[in-house]
Amino acid sequence: MRATVMYGAGDIRIENVPDPTVIEPSDAVVRVTRACICGSDLWPYKTLEHSETGRVMGHEAIGVVEVVGADVRTLKQGDLVVMPFAFSDGTCMFCHDGLHTACVHGGFFGTGVVDGAQAEAVRVPQADGTLFVLPVGEDDALMPSLLTLSDVMGTGHHAAVAAKVGPGKTVAVVGDGAVGLCGVIAAKRLGAEQIILLGRHADRIALAREFGATDIVSARGNEAVERVRELTDGYGVHSVLECVGLEQSELTSIEIARPGGAVGRVGVPQDETMPASRPAFYNNISVSGGPAPVRAYIDELLPDVLEGRIDPGRVFDRVIGLEEVPEGYRAMNDREAIKVMVKP
Ligand SMILES: [Zn+2]
Image 1: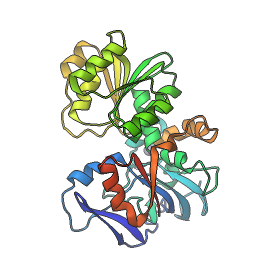
Image 2: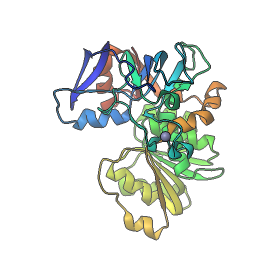
Image 3: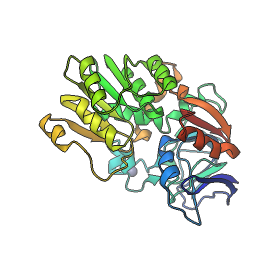
Image 4: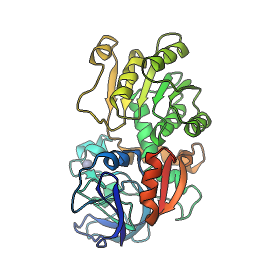
């Protein structure tokens, strides 16, 4: 089959690789009907050390179950499924707690351990626990929004939950990528009264306003902090969704939270240490978040997608074939595209 292989920073090739097969009896093989490129794929795109073997990329997909292993009970050939970016057994203590990204038998797609889904097909470990069967057809008009349940919508929701967003709260979303935009949707969905987006790209800002952002701050650093304070009677916001992962965005997130506020982090941190320890301490700011257990959130978010209350699929502004994936990475990295959908 054809698959996206990253050999090092900037070196992405579409190649023939062996077809995935059932290895463990709990595996399924899924034919990918939709995949996408993630903002987090851009970190290895910029920094991955060269290797001879490469890494099959991609961790967000919808597809059709082709083969199931002998122990798979809840899935059958022909089921249309969402593949969350992490696999999980659905039965361990952490899965029961709704934290599937800490599953004791879990792991992440496209990280080199398990091959990714920017490919014609993918092997899914722990298939019963991982995959979610969709009640629609393969070419349903809602496909873009359903695809976001594999990562960005669930991740934006996780940021909002970690940041304790609720009715009447003031919220800031740091970052205008697909996750930040989904964070705006999530904040509005959870009842936020004021939603301030910190972002700089005109196309993303326009979409954020349609999703429910009430204010936009395009400044950075101290100026951004000042601006958010002005917008909140000088206090700062109750909830900050940190959707970038850089030192500057983490610092800003803590500085714009009001005393007693909360920061929900979902941007993959690019540094070992977290800034602003002292302001976080003296202002009693909760800092939470991490890899989103998107598998846990599908139950809650799916009805809103199916019934049209949220439309996160609008973050996709480009659709490409598998052979064009290297160009898709470039377009996202150069901020020409918000998020790229791949139809293998
Ligand atoms: Zn588990």
